[in-house]
Image 1 (spheres, helix red, strand yellow):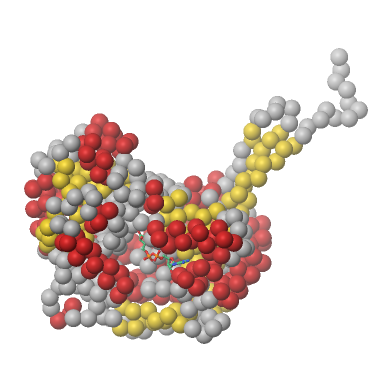
Image 2: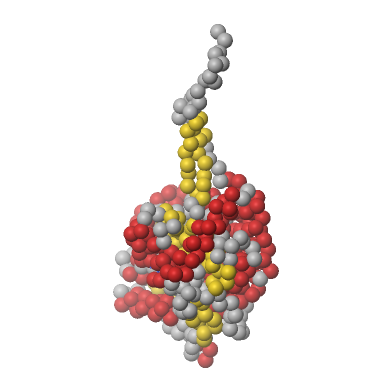
Length: 493
Ligand code: NAD
């Protein structure tokens, strides 16, 4: 049981502050619908303050050695480990994600800090033999102030791990979490206050349309990194372009296919399909393999096993170590998931299991829905085309591999994909034809640090979690040194 979260202030210019307008957004525990805390509802005035502080602070930060910056980041890593349990409990109450797997989120934040802190020396330029008599080389420099806007599903992990590469590269950062789950980042604000020089790491909370939009449009923020939905990503590209030229990277949604060949172990594949849905955070994961494409020979066997596993999943209090699925994050997201159950049924999909509020007194309040599987889904149905971002799995039957590939590639997205087969040739033939940025062969769900994550198509622009991520927070400057023979010194004949 979590009592009300006491952290209520943003981190701007090294100070813990309320919003200039003294406005707040309540944050609700989605399991109970109780208000468990509040975050400042920042406006343009707060963002302006953060940018001014960041703009003043970054040159000294950039002038530090890589090692000095890394040491500061390692202090943050240590403090996060000390506060891991507190962060975990607040995160679970604020997001609804279940506690056992959520332990991995703070761990991932710390691991990412360590990874990028060690990678700082890879921010290097090149020498180019454009003309043999001169010296042409590049150096990499930070942008200055970077804006990072992150979604509701993994707030602390995203707020830390997605800010680190920008910080290592010598930038000051302004992070904005989602308004439905901001509480862990307010604790992060308290932790980070004593770690960074004032103005280097700023946390601004508030609504997307106000605080988010002010970050996007601020002329001093030339580098923007966004994680969220496709419609918001498109709005951000438009709004950013109205101010000035900006480098905008986008990590957006997915409708990710998992293609299963007939040569697999059906028990193993059924469990993998369930794991790939990330039900432990209610399917609210960009990488969830929410379209399960089963070859006709194993379709019934896998579907029957998936249905059995899903229907026996333990939905309940996300604070309970035994719960396997919690509530949907917010009232808005809950309504969206319910809408898509209806859409799928109206379009002719067959409900195999789930689709309704679980029964029992503890589910009277809160945004609860059972984990849900639809079969008989056709590639063109809305449930197979549109991102739900919820615990709805669609099963599609295929017989020819060309059809499976065409179905996999038939959406606007291209984030992740999974291929299951024991035939290496089939796996690679298929992998090369799938239009996705992150692809597992005989795997699902897991991320591996150092391997770039990002999407094709409308799933985004840019790759995070690797060297490309770090370098994307630098601008390249080319320098030409024109070399002449030394004056007065004539080469002897
Ligand atoms: P969202 O797009 O509604 O909001 C994301 C963030 O953008 C929030 O902080 C929000 O306040 C802010 N925002 C909203 N409108 C804005 C505006 N006009 N200007 C500036 N900021 C604005 O997304 P969400 O519902 O929080 O998260 C779910 C989405 O995120 C899904 O589509 C999911 O696939 C995606 N996601 C992608 C990745 C990835 O790495 N590709 C990871 C996690 C989530």
